Length: 337
Image 1 (cartoon, rainbow, N blue to C red):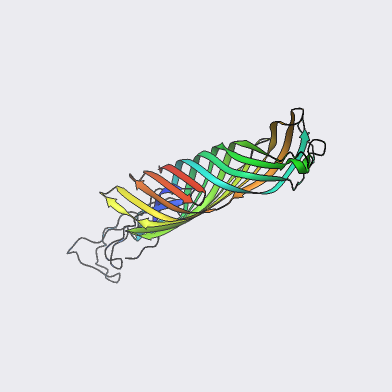
Image 2 (image 1 turned 90 degrees about the vertical axis):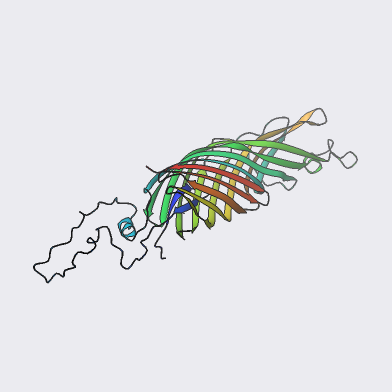
């Protein structure tokens, strides 16, 4: 059996997954009738040249929506197409180990560095712990441009924090008489937490193909999150490949377990001020203004998930991504009017 395209019933934009609904083609595609019904059994078949021929009854032309483009041809070949427009509510929880670059700081003793202080790369200041915890609630709208191509856009809210550890070699920073070889000050670790509370925007696309008992999909999504002052700007790129079988339960319900691989690139710029307790003689504090770029240390992960298509209009999805130093849970509910 040939399939031109198979269309998703559930959309995962952030992870970018689609689970195509089954195409339904006639048993004999070469002789199957199209939208017009075939003449009743036993009726005579007449040629155009026969002036006495009675015309076979033909249904009036059927109207098709503008999208998906090519949907009329797909339907006439026997493919079942869901409504082109969809809306999804999503919840994503992500834990990601990070690596740092472009760390720039200004350090003072006893008071904060001014906001216009020049931040520079100092060899005696390094990052240690780097881990992001975030939860994203998002609304997405999607549209099937073609029977095989879906585009989507969304807006949401991401909240969480990024744990960062900064190590300062006090002997390299603090001059004598505070720190000297005979009385070294050693190192100080300044762990701090950068809060995340941003509005996000997402755009992306999905391409899908499959058969009556299987599907495959590739998706690309880009999310931008611009923060207010002293918080973290976040940018993510998500590319996923998913495939699996489909199981039919009655006429409406279908189950789509799947597996795949995902590339999730997380980039953040974090800035702010962190202060130590009294660590120098005279109970002096170390105050550090910082700016640092963070990115995912291991962006690749394995995927396992399931879609449940409850009807032509409703679908649910749950997915888990696990990689080296990262965990990601995605829950989605989709409605197609």
